[in-house]
Length: 484
Image (cartoon, rainbow, N blue to C red; front, top):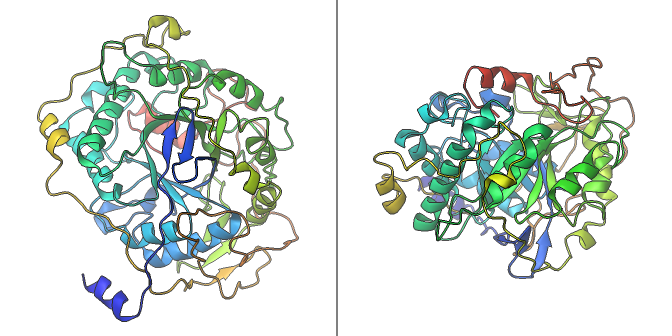
C-alpha cells in the first residue's frame, strides 16, 4: 500500500497491458486481432537455482530494479516472452510483472521448484503427489493469474526422460495438469493454459506428446489433456541445417499436433561462440506452420555456460558477444510478417487416448489417472486460503539504475524500458538502446567434444548432435528430485 501511494505521489503512469492470448487448436492467438503468435522467448533465472531462495525472500521476479535492467536489455534484443522456472508465491511480483508487461513480454511460468515437496518426482511419483504439493502449485497460479501477460503454466519440466520413468510418471503428470486446469477453471478470471515441458529425448518424446495431447473418451470435460506441449532441445549446434540438426524430424513428428508445440529451451553452446543460425528456420517457412516459436537458453551466464550476460555481485551487468549475435539473427527475421499471419482456425484432430497411440513398449499406456489426493478437492473447488494476489501497478520511472557494459567494455548510457502501445507486444527494433556491431571474440568457452560447458550429454544412445540434458538435472533426477 505504501509503495502504491508513493508511486502515485511521484506521478506514476498506468501500465498498458499486452493482449492476453488464447489457444485455438495448435496456435496461440491474439483474440483482438485474430493473428497467430510466435514466441521469441528467453529463459530467465538469474543466479540459477540460487536465484530462488524462499529463506531470503528472493526469486527472479521479486526485485523491480533488476527486472527493469533485464527487461530493457531483453526488449532491445527482441524478446517477447520470458520463461521463469522457480517462483515463490509468497513474494510480491507486481512490480516485475508490470515492468515485463509494459515491455511487451509474456511470462511462461513453471509451478514447481527444486526444493523438497515442491515438485513431482520421477522416482515413485505417487509419493510426491499429495495435497501440500498441489497447494503450492495452486499458490503459484493465484500469485500470477491476474497478470495479463501470464501466458501459460508448466505443470512439469523434463520429468519423463528415460524409458524407465516413462513407465510410472505419465499418469501422475497428467493428473497434476488436470488439477491445475480445474483449479484455474474454478478460481481464475480467465482461462490460462497449462502444459508440459519435455526433454528432447527422442525415444520418449513422441509418446509423451501423444500421451498428453490425447482426449480420454470417458471424460466429458477432459481437463487432464495438456493445452500445449513444449520441448527443451539442443540438437542444432553450430552451423547445422534444418536437416542435419534433426529439426526436420521434429516438424514431421509434430505436423499433426492438436496443441501448440514450441521450444521451451533451445540454443546449443558448442561450438563457441554461438551463432544461433536456427533462428532463421524456427521463424521461417520450415517451421512456423508447425512450431509456435521458442525460448533461448539462457539470459544470464551461470555455471553451465549458456548465458548472454554476466551479472556482477553489485547487480551491474556485462553483455557477452553472443547477445549481439542473437540480436542480429532476430533482426534478420521479418517479424512483422511472422506475427501478422491470420490464425488458421484449424482446431486440429484431437486423438483419442488409446494404447495404439504409444509406440515404445515401456511407455505407460494407462489412461486411468490417480484420484485427486485427500483434502485437495475443496481447494480446487473453493480456492486456497489465504491466497496471494497479484496486480498490474503503475511504474514511476522506466530508467535502468544499474550500470550495464557492452561486450566491448563500454558503458551503455540512457538505458530504459520503452513501454509498448496498449494491446501490443515487443518486436525487434522497439528499443534501440543496445545495438550495433561489437567486434572481438566471444567471452564464452567450450570444453570439448563429448561434453560441453554445461555438462549436457546425449542420453539413451541418442547422438550428441541431436539431444542433450544438463548433468545437474540428470543427477537430481537420479536422486528423485525435479529441477529446472
